[in-house]
Image 1 (cartoon, rainbow, N blue to C red):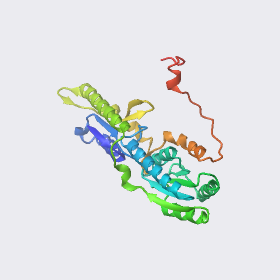
Image 2: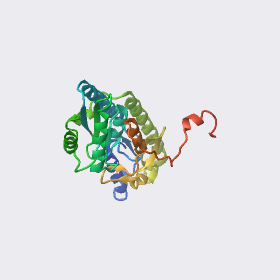
Image 3: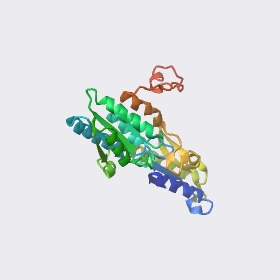
Image 4: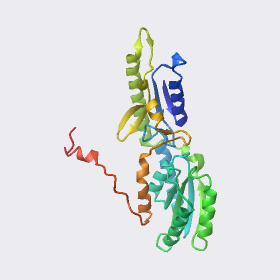
Length: 287
């Protein structure tokens, strides 16, 4: 069985695995293919459809910035989708040069909002007299898009005016990006090959019987490889209440947002890594 979808597909696959003891008919190979604009499926860095949504948001933000450039001293508050997952807001903020991106994974308080307003007030004194703020739709139950808009409009009175824009379901439309088209093709091919191997492996005495943990997996992209991870293993890595993975790879890119927006920040240099694709080519790492 191939299940293509978002977090509901992941939960549905997990429920079928848990029901195998009661229903023998569910003892078949199961693979979940992540396909959601929210990009919130554990076991995969990317989901089919997320890149297309990201391109749509970035293109819209670029047009909004052009509008702001035509009218001096204007700040736009833009709400993105994604549920509790801040992937779209963060990556669109990086791509479009946003001054801030508010997400659930990085809690913020009223003082943080005030600091962003003060930064925009100072920015209006420079040659770039426009601002762009992104907000994930469920980043905070109290600091809503209307609240942030009213705060910016009041605190920036006399310096800049404010507008808000809720992108809504336009993020789920549009033609698929080249990345998503190729990604979907690769995921489909990999799923069928995996299922074929599993069916041969689990065929016993004229019937299929698969109840091992590795017979029900999520197919995801990890770094540069397509990998299968068992649903049972991913259960402990999931925040089911907020429908997001407990760890997100793109969180480490958040400081770049402030650097591009010209905030004065101190970077955390405690974690170090290597550029695998570079050092492997140079023969510095054994294959």
